[in-house]
Image (tube, rainbow, N blue to C red; front, side, top):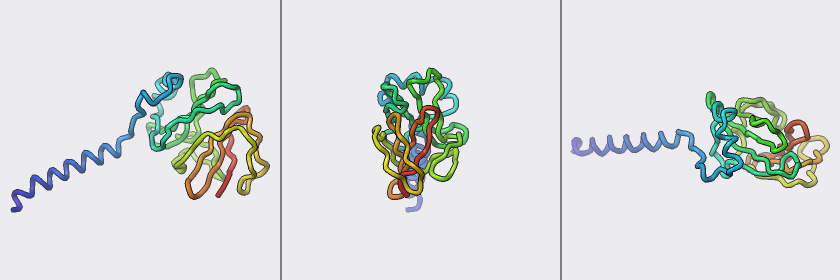
Length: 176
């Protein structure tokens, strides 16, 4: 009986190894899910040589008018290739530079009271329309948005707004 079980056990081990390898490998963003205007940016050397598109959240990119110029801007989940640190790459239509503004993914950025180069903490995000921002948890005066913002959340825990102030992206804590 043991002889007939060996192929079954080894077969199960092989299948388990293949499944785990697929789960551990970073998923690629299917090209048909990437907007045509965004493809050259994520396929260009200023992004692709250092980062991969992150697919740990759905959607893996957001389109909004983050700088308030009336043209679409894009935010894409990013993973630093050398160390796996997660973050966001943002391309503003008003900037002619093909390099994105990096938030996390190896670049130190403020979220809440901490500065981190790995923004692995959030598990939900969405575009926050240009409107009045309510007073956040323990924060100062709410910002006046010049464009749309990105609402970043750790579900059932905390949230904050990532917004453009005309010069750089800033964080405003919403809830804890």
